[in-house]
Length: 152
Image 1 (spheres, rainbow, N blue to C red):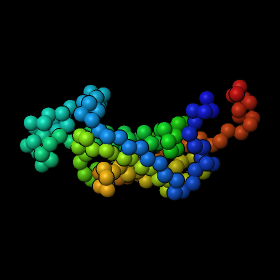
Image 2 (cartoon, one colour):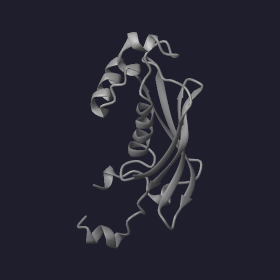
Image 3 (cartoon, helix red, strand yellow):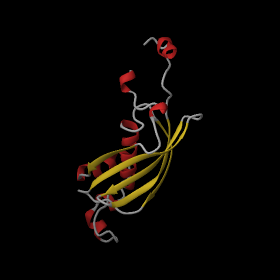
Image 4 (cartoon, rainbow, N blue to C red):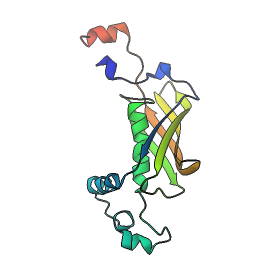
């Protein structure tokens, strides 16, 4: 199982960063609506969306937040990290067909509490569409006795 683990607390440094990008398809929006239950017509009804200030459908804001979770759970800190907290501000809409990029950057490490704070930013091109800060609990590197005790 060791190969499924991401970074350990001791491996992290302030300034480390990682990203994930995805081009959002119409199917992604419908699947997200289905999974989340958020069927707001601004996301799934083009005729309704035309009557809004956006003039067209927009992607769920929480879809962008989910990409932050993708980075945290698969890249930095990676598998094994536990999401503790997230503050987020949505600043601009995301449209179907946009390529959305979530980037996490380590800003603070609390060794005693095993907490890592990260700047979380989601962009489309040069436009910041969501920004905030996340906190994650990260495992310490196991000692040889822990590995032996666990039967590894």
